[in-house]
Amino acid sequence: MNYKTIDDLGNLQGKVAMLRADLNVPMSEDFKVTNTARIDRTVPTIKELMSKGAKVVVISHFGRPEGKGDMKNSLQHIVGDLQRALGKKVVFVDDCIGEKVSAAVAKMSNDEVLLLENLRFYDEEKKGNEDFARELVKPADVYVSDAFSTAHRAHASMVAAVKERPSAMGRLMEEEVKALEGALSNPTRPLIAIVGGSKVSTKLDLLNNLVKKVDKLVISGGMAHTFMKASGIDAVNETNSLVQMDMIDTAKEIMSVAKANNCEIVLPDDVVVAKEFAVNAEHKTVGVNEIPTDGGHLLDVGEKTIASINAKLDECKTLVWNGPLGVFEMKPFDNATNKVAQHAAELTSAGKLMSVAGGGDTVSALENAGVANKFSYISTAGGAFLEWMEGKELPGVAVLKK
Image (cartoon, rainbow, N blue to C red; front, side, top):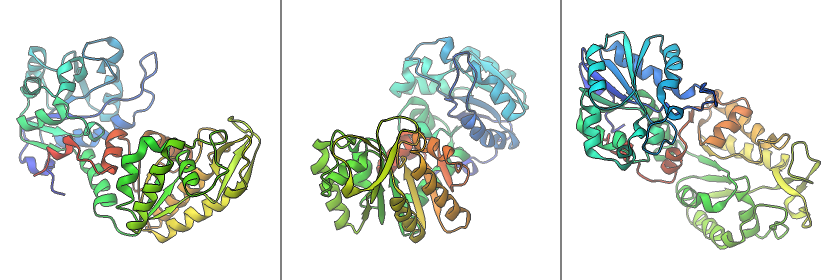
């Protein structure tokens, strides 16, 4: 990798290391953290910095406070969870710049961690303000950026602050960038992508980039309906599916670009048609040319399609996955997503496939299938993961190039 990592920071003994983490965790109305994954994934970098003799000051955004402080969006609520995950005392400071912070850093012991208040209590953070960045890093000797999930934003803590001190990627960002570069920038081929979602219009940049990079592209979810219509399956209509009629020509163009780049597009052979959009709704599996035109909902793909996708996976060495195959939130319409995910996990465990997945719905779908810990890498970054897959340069990553 051509990026600065912790290994490039040199001797950290006695130095103050400011760590830009992503502690934007889900929280209940009574301020209890409901999923500690982001906290847990931050811990290795904190522990490594401490083991090298650094005093660690952690900063993060949390929620959407829109530039003003409020208890609902205070990072004070996660102190207990961070303390448990670290096994170290965490001291909270109710600001992220100024005298309070300087005084707290001066009093720090080597065996405790400082957690500063929500960066987004200041509008200057989202505006990328350089003066704010300079104030932020005043107590720090080195700066470590470990919030890949925010790397698509040119916020002050992601770009301007990095330029103010000797800086490096944390281990989590390093792991994420390595996984994504291995999956898209320099993959072991054949490379297959599974892309789902309800609308073609929301994933145009992604599809246009992937058809030029992957060997096989499985288009699934509601967006597949538009491609099915574009490929001549007339039974798909606005009553029984999520087809976007104004995207038909766009879908045809994408298929044309795919053909020119020797990218095989894989569409459903059969679909699951339900009488109503509901859990355990009465349903049947039909071939794509037997779809009823007068009612019903296309909520999943059938066994024939599952077998076809799994056969394609058998032929490939690398998988990138974003989006479920059907309405996985409602049983039994999670069947296809579950079976394909489980097959990908088996191939990964056998060392036959490198599998990388990301995006909120995708992570939830893989958890539902029981394989979230069986892929090569699962990205918790939503927007940043998508923009990387779209081929865009992320400002928070680019600034860390050597």
